[in-house]
Length: 347
Image (cartoon, rainbow, N blue to C red; front, side):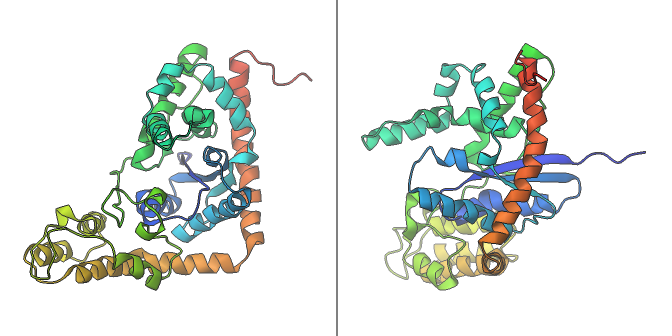
């Protein structure tokens, strides 16, 4: 009797700068958990082609490619257990993306939340959205279907894209026969990490002052935390407030939901705020210390160890991962090409 083959989990991260708290709690933290499971085989990629939808400094992109790999390792991913690859090293993904684009309607893409949000935001800035942003979901679908992923762990903002990939797999199978594996979403609650400003979720668009980067030292993180705005009702120390009206209070809620608060910790925070038992600085210090003890220190130390090994260590991991990823993806794409009538081998 043979044991069941492990399911394949796949996720890619764009190379657009340093990993922040929202990236880690929303996605990266789950990567190490998946990596440690014997019933799952993980493939993690650097979404270099997706990164080009927001063109920037080419030298910064080259730096950030290695930076994403460092972040994978700092999160706890073991390169001996999981494949880590560069999307650019798999040209077959682009071939598959073209095939998928030919069974996708423009109207379907126009309804994607990502496209509408990006297009509107660029329009407000007097800029035009590029075609790469429009077809982004198709390339992401090719990323998913190429390696025949079973599950796709993503943040909440990417859930619609995975659903789109599922739809394309079903449509291809309807047109050309039962070929593609239909991926499943990773069954976990979506995590929305609030930014340090009062405007919304944590992300690069919030600006460096409102974003906690995992590469920041504790002092740098505290410097940002201590000036973060809180409930406007707490003008004076004796004024009661509400954690529901404060991003720091909401951050405590996220930490508690993830099991990082000690027993009764969230209740202590709520009572301290609503009854004005302590000031906002105490609440902020508590949040940072919970994260420091829960994961920040460990992630920072692993990151320092990886960086100390130099770029050659990262390049070795990528080279090995590129070979393994392409060996898995190439025959799948070749089969899809043959299914639509293309001739892939003339000899």
